[in-house]
Amino acid sequence: MPGAFAMSNAALLARLPMSMLGLGEVLLVSSQTGSYALAGALSATGALANAVFGPMFGRAVDRFGQRKTLPLLVAGHVFGLIAFISLVQLGAPSWSLFAAVIFSGGLFPNVGAMVRARWAFLLAGEPPALRTAFAYESVIDEFIYVAGPPLATVLAVSVVDFGALAAVAILLIVGSALFVRLPQTEPPAGGDTHRGAGSAVWFPGVLSVTIAFVFLGGLFGSFEVVTVAFADERGVRGWTGLLLGLYALSSGLAGVILGSARMRVPLHRQFLVASGLLALSTIAFPLIGNPWWLGVQCLVAGLVVSPVLINGYALIERLVPNARMTEGLVWTNTGLGLGMAVSAALAGFVIDRSGASTAYWIAFGSALLTFVTVLVSFPALNRAWAAAHA
Image (cartoon, rainbow, N blue to C red):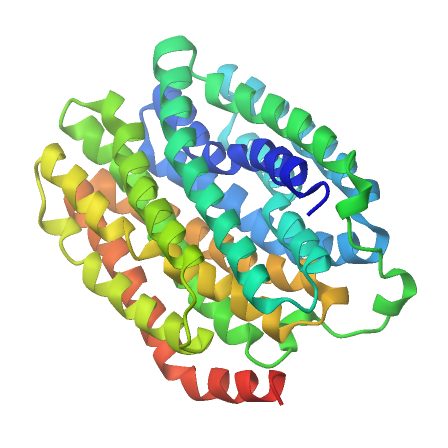
């Protein structure tokens, strides 16, 4: 598609910070204060702020267009991030750190939803091609989570403790600037058609997927914080990025396979099976004490992460009208952010009191609840799927 390659590459740069932001905050704060509880709470607060304000900004993007809204969000986020770094370095009171992270996290732009909305616009009426495009973007997301954590770790551990967050700001500015310079791929703004309309989360099936993504976010948020502490406890802090990267690498490989396949099974059934396999694959994490075996387990468990994400996003695309696509996709990311916020804070609390291995039970519990949510809501998803294809 004309402009699609440049669009996706620009979005890659702008999305790379999403795999570095929370980890960068944890590495900076834990380095300065020695407290994983405070580091996890601050990272969680930023993710929670993004979860709260994300749908509102997603709706604004649909209404006013990406070119008008994205630069404003980037400018606000970078300002808040600079304030956060400065306050941590100065040893400012904790309340000021929370204020800064709420401001910066609330304005962090959801470029992943924007690029998927562009794909939905470019490939309207071509569901097989669109599913492949969504799988491709999910593979890029996994590449981001392969490349981002090691980069963040190297910058924060080997260069300067705020290096990861400085890279977040630079990548976000450059990637977003390139992204908005491609107007031919941008869906038209909805304008006044959104005024008085209800939230996209109330379209049939969207709330079910969003709740499942809340628990999926619980897996991601807890796994990231606990893995940092696991590596630190065993004297291999520099392995943090590698361990997180292995998890994302195998997930990306699964996304390549799924995106190239032509599955005849309906998306909501694939969503159910993938979430069940996700729960089974995470049960071993709390039982592992060796970093080498943890790396092997990360490779195994990562294989079912991407299928859950791909099918969840593809379901939203089928259930939400194009004019509300960004907001609908932001709701799923809001679910992820909310789960990450709660689980990261809870993981930091458990780590400080019982250690990293115990805290891995939070990751397993989150994966299990993802499956339970999809299983319980499956009849509603089945009805929504039937209505969308009537």
